[in-house]
Length: 80
Image (cartoon, rainbow, N blue to C red; front, side, top):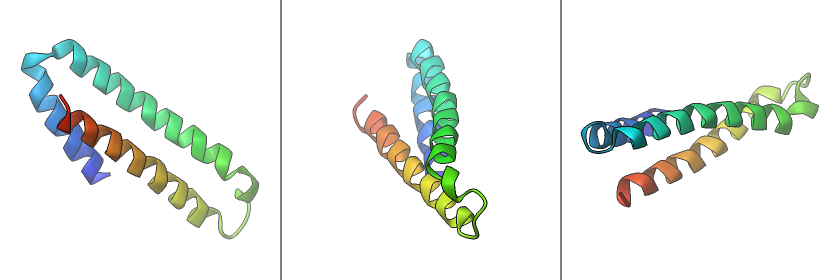
C-alpha cells in the first residue's frame, strides 16, 4: 500500500493548488476503490471463507486489486 499512498501523495501535491476539484474527485475515487476492492475480494473468497487457505486467497486478491490500482494511479501521474 505504500506505493499506492506515494502516488496519491504525488497527485495531491500537484492538484491541491492547480485543480482542487480534481483532487476532491481523486480522494472520492480512492475511497470508492477501497470499498470496491474489499467487496470484490469478499465475493472472490466467499467459498473459502471457512477454510484453512482463506488468508492466502484473501491476501492474493487484495494484492491483485492493489496492483491494478497502482497502475491506474501511475497513469494519472504520468499523463496529467
